Amino acid sequence: MRNRTSSASSRMSLMFGKARTCNIVTVPEHEPSECNIVILGAMGSGKSALTVKFLTKRFISEYDPNLEDTYSTEEVVDQQPVLVKVMDTADQDGPVNCERYLSWANAFIVVYSIDNRTSFEACQQYLETVTLYSKGLQPEAPVILLGNKVDMERYRQVSKADGVAMALRFSCLFFEVSACLDFLSVQHVFHEAIREVRRETERSIRPLFISEDKSAISLSSAPPLTACYKELPTPATAKLVTVKSSRAQSKRRAPTLTLLKGFKIF
Ligand SMILES: Nc1nc2c(ncn2[C@@H]2O[C@H](COP(=O)(O)OP(=O)(O)OP(=O)(O)O)[C@@H](O)[C@H]2O)c(=O)[nH]1
Image (cartoon, rainbow, N blue to C red; front, side, top):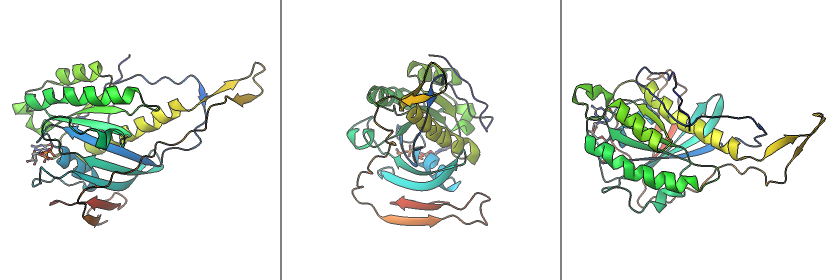
């Protein structure tokens, strides 16, 4: 495994992860047009705040910790549209009943709060669970370790080096952000998850082999790519809320957000 650093759009983002080498010719028949992202982590690490920041550019300070919600939004990542569904989980005691999200997810974001060592330690269990599951998938579901609340720097209990070391151990990407500071850092993390899903999908496609005279190419006998679409589990008590962001509030193309169960957004 090699490391990689990224000049992320924010000075606060830091990324380490798997090297991406591509020396075979691949033909993606379909890019995934849908991407399911599951947010995991200890209570209070900021999962809901990060999710809502990504969806609305706003920071929430009131929430119901017992709600487990799934949200969807249309995004354009690298000029390609994608329907992103984000499941904001509400595990009380580490990964339990993980089946509900393991088979649904295309990517996982495991969150801790940099000012809370216990939340960082809780990530280990989540990372073990999702990486073990993901390893058997074709394509693999990428995993991101995310340190939140960098605005709480003076109360930091988890060093950046600790985050990097944990990410290296589990071969996942790593970022640090704050849900209450700039939107672009948070957006970058979600977009990287989508990019990783696309890369993994491309990697899982059967390669084209170049013939000896290099004048023709032939496809091997693999089945065609089936994009990583997965069924959305039915939320138990979902209340459908539609939020349309105002163009006056945002220069960003106004997305239509479908929120299943809502909470206060400021
Ligand atoms: N200072 C600061 N506070 C944050 C940040 N993100 C979230 N919070 C606060 O941390 C608390 C927990 O945030 P949530 O988003 O509800 O955390 P959660 O992981 O969804 O928590 P559960 O729903 O209990 O699992 C709230 O009081 C948030 O306002 C951040 O980046 N900086």
